[in-house]
Amino acid sequence: MWAIILLILVIAAVVSQLSGSKKRAWIGMKTTRVILLGYVGLLILLAGASLLLPMNNTSIKMLSEEEVEQSMKLQDQVISEAYRGTFEEENGLDVIEKWTLPLTSDELGITPINDYSIQVFIEKSSEVGEEIQITHYAGKTIVDGMDLTEKRDKVRIEMQGNELEIKNPSHVSVKLAELSTGFPFQQFSSEKVEWFQSNSYGNIGMDVLYIKAPIGLKIEGQALYVN
Amino acid sequence: MYLTESNVRDIIFKQYRYKLQAYLGIFTSLIFIQVLGMLFSFSGTGSMGGGSDAFSYDVRTYSGSLIAIFTLVWAFSHGISLTTKQQRYDDFNFVTTRQVSNVANGLFLVTASGTAAITGLLTTCVLRLLVTQVLRTPSVAGVQLSVIDVVEGLIGFFLYILLFACVGYFIGMLAQTNKIVAFLLPVLLIGVISIQVYLGGEGTLLVDIGRFYVLEASFLLFTMKSVITSALFFLGACMLGNRLEVGV
Image (cartoon, rainbow over all chains, first blue to last red; front, top):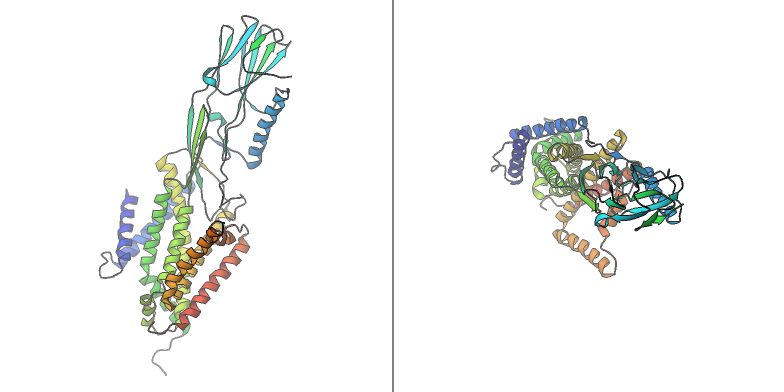
């Protein structure tokens, strides 16, 4: 409230000063000086408070440029290797969830609900019996160095008879404020700032389902066989 | 033999003190312009967004850049305003010469620039506080600056403000020397930009000039560039001022 009153007084003082003629100014020099000092005092007080209060009031992890680059590379590498037929279980991507679902027949259909975009890789293995083992991996979702992976909802998996339904996660919308000192305070900082071009970026991590199925299982649906 | 002996330093100091008192309006307009910059910045100085089927994000950037730019505009306009006939005549309330008047103006510009740099930094801090406490949007600090970065940034900001003030002072004095210059300068500026565009390029004259300073990551080199340019503009303005007739 006091800040608003002070703001109104400051604007009134400015208008008074800018009106040019000292005779017309309804705020005297003394009052103007008091307002100026009051304003500077208030600025110092609020600026001090801003330094004491934490700026990062979210649990969002900030990644360094190297970490961002590594994570992008990793996602591309895993996907391209999988397309070439190789999929490592310990591949470095985040494991979101694991399921083990029993099979009721020797056929399995894979149906993404609502055409949810997800990469499905299948490995036929003698290690699994009358069940399928599913692992959900996800690449990191990074926006301007902020790791938003944990903000995303999870993919839901359900077995309906011999149909494996992949249900899309609920839509999550994230609103964030990025605080920056800006020009010219960042000019000499070690963090490189491009003033004449935007260096903002956002990457939504890719969802990957890796299914380990018994050798004899017939699978229908959009999926790639690996290993 | 006079009843009162006065030396140049005393006169400069008296004039400087007089200017601090008389031009209080410059500081109130500084506050006004910085508060205005803060209010404009409150809606964000940049934003980005994106999304997929299951996830979308909207990131708004809040920075003090707009406050800084508004402050530079203020410095430029007040550099000009110091050269008006009325302001120059005020100096002759004292026993003075044009050199003394110029030095007092220089000191006043340095003081005003220093004050503007400090209040600009403080206003940026207040903006951060308002964004986190009033808007209540989950916030993250973008680039983390060290104390050295902030100190260098503050000095850099001061040098930018001083540079703009000196350029304004020079242009103001140029316009006082010849009124046609006041019309010719913007025409020349727009003309050069238009010619650049006409020749198939982009009208990037101001951006190209800006790059010389803004893209300078070395603090020492930037200090040299800005101090030398400010000094050249200020000396140029003094030389022009010396040529002005008393009645001009």
